Image (cartoon, rainbow over all chains, first blue to last red; front, side, top):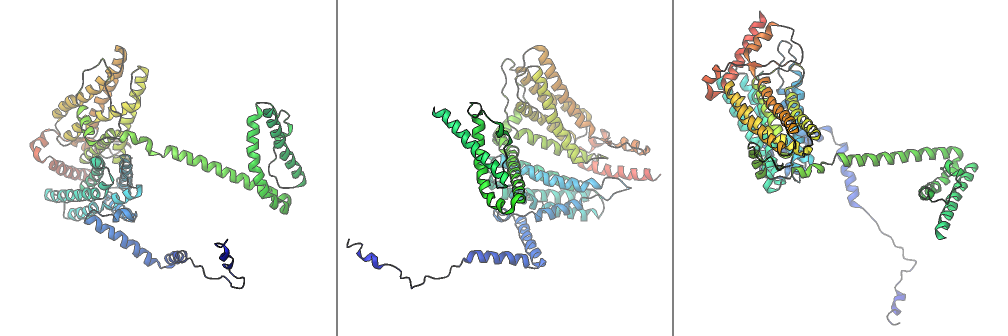
Length: 219
Length: 352
């Protein structure tokens, strides 16, 4: 009885109002952020995306074991590279030969379906990489081969010949090795350690086919 | 009697709100369910109708909830509100059913995990299986073991596609309607899947003990010999060398497949039919791959004289064996140089 005696005094009198403020700072900040990306100028959006793509290009050119390509994947870079490679591989139609048309679609389909197949294969082998992350990495690692295509086109302007061919062969082989090493640096970590070779072989085949298309290109 | 009381009670309970709902409909009220079939139902206590009753009870629960929700609106809007509620309910039910079916189909077909056990291999296993595919084993009284995996065969088919592409590009094969890549993929995958299915069908007729997966794996590993032969002979254009490799390497891989099939089939006629078909298809495929994508310089000059070339025609061209043999170490160079000169020739010939 003595214990509970004092409790009767603990009560809020009806005259004292209970008031205060409830703010939810996180939500309002998020809303602010959304509207700010909607309202910003097109130039800002494009520059932000281009900077992200450029940063990933740097990661491909100097392949280190980093997570940047995997964490925020995007498919802009692979699309730009794929389209530019397919455009450069177009044969100028000679005497109305219908050989120029399929080249673009061919390259496009090879790159995208090849990347999808490699991704499915690495997932089936037990890799823990997501579908789009893998597509992103494989697409970005086409950058050295696109550079090789550019160099080959420039070299071919000098006219065909055996020395010409040697230079092109050397450039394509170096870029092919660079592509395979770059993609391996990013993809190999996601595979169980004893199966890395099984996941790398299709990547090797994929870049080999693209390198072969580049090497045998004659305008 | 509890059991008979329950259906009786259930029938009464089931009939009550339905009849009540019918009355409410007459009044223009809310329940959206007009259950025509229950109006003539007099066999409420028979055993066969138990399932129907339970189903009706369940449906009626759902409808009671919906009716309770709709009643307020229905009462306000009268007959028009009732029709709107009905159509909205029907649409909602259709949407739910469609969504359920679609998600079930998606999880069934897009689930690549069904293929996962067939890719459970180690690199050492793949290497040993590749080597074993060239070694025929003469044990025919006991079924030989076939590894049921799909990684090795799939990679071999893709390697064959890459090698074919190499061969077609170096021979400058012109495919009028279609693409190089499409033709290469179509040929290789078509052979692997088509011939596997055909031999599996024959095996079914001949009572052989082999499953589809095993047949796919067996034929896939049999393409290893093809890959080796084509890789060597697309770069070294000697007909005699090709025939030697065709017999030796192609023959070894065919013998291996034949031995496995013989060990799993009973009866001489069946064995002959099955193994004869497989051996002939396998060897002929290698022959076809070599000669269809090979170079014929004379072919260019021949086809240029006739301007009307029918569509979907491959123009194979062959360089005589003596020429590359002289410059064997640098086998790549003469082909490109010869291609350039052949093209120059074609241009000059066309202009005349």
